[in-house]
Image 1 (tube, rainbow, N blue to C red):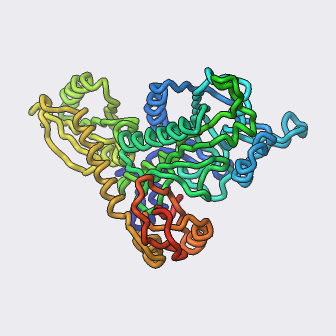
Image 2 (image 1 turned 180 degrees about the horizontal axis):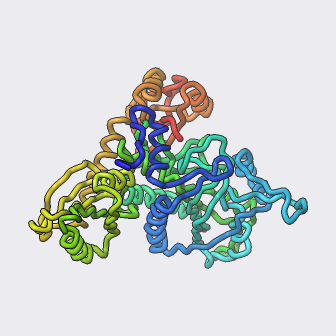
Image 3 (image 1 turned 90 degrees about the vertical axis):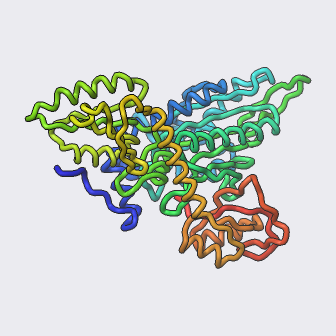
Length: 477
């Protein structure tokens, strides 16, 4: 083999490029049931890195993990009208088990509000029990009609956090606080800038008082909802009778919030940073941060000195995830291509010349920059931080260049259908206008930013009535 499998260029067929990268980088395969996905070890290692980092962050805030059943009585979902209506088209329902028809059908977990809140009604009785927070890492099932690996699959992995609080003010603060935690995680760890804000009434979580979200802009000009944080109000507490006795001895219904992100974040990383060579992984989530490729002529006896040099070097890199690719059946060029496909941030090339000069040849995956560095000057942690900074700057520049302010319907159509990207437009907040835009140009409201521009004198981009808010529109996955 001269090089790993060829990857379609983004400019030729972006969708095929994405599927090629998922396959050639060995991230995932298709499951035997339509819409399901097998996450392969390299892909799962990326998820484990995300999981461990975010898990540590929420545990630092005193939030513990738990696990709730994946089978939920169908009657639980019916307790909250908006919730059951929102999820009914996507439900997987079990009607038979153990060779018999069940007396009550069971739903495979699409989200855990109902099964958790039934338990919370037994666990919470006093203001002393509040605030109550729990998180779980689990799988969920939503029977999707159109699927794409990582981005949208019938079964996926996620974390879902749930909080029970005493007041609306506390719940508002928590919902917005969780949203900010996601935004900083995406920017600091995944090098991905986000637009944040509230979702429209049509786009909010089924059963929520309101929803907030982080929205990314991907290289094909589409948006990706990457994380959500919801104020559920008292809707579920009234449905599941979650009450507490306040300090004055009066019974009150609790306020609730839920918040989560899923394995679609892996798809987001691919579609934000990937290029024609394959993945480009942010260092914090890369299963391999640095690959060392030995280059020598074994017939000339160069291998021993080179490998000894590499052994001493890697002993000083134990705090990093390093892979020494000493496979002799592949050429250095083949290895270069393979690790580029896999998105490894830094590559060290070491041959007899580097050994003699006490240097390494350093190659960055983000910009292809190649430099010869003295061993005494080599600071790989600094190089990885530099990598992150460049990766984030590139992504921010792309978002800025592909976000356009429009005030007319023609301007909106031009952005969505020609320029592609985000269109920031004035809107009357009428769901009929929202639906018309969705039907006409397949664009949806993504978020209503918290930092609002003045709407005085502005007209709705669709109907021409007085605008109430500015909102980001885009085509989305």
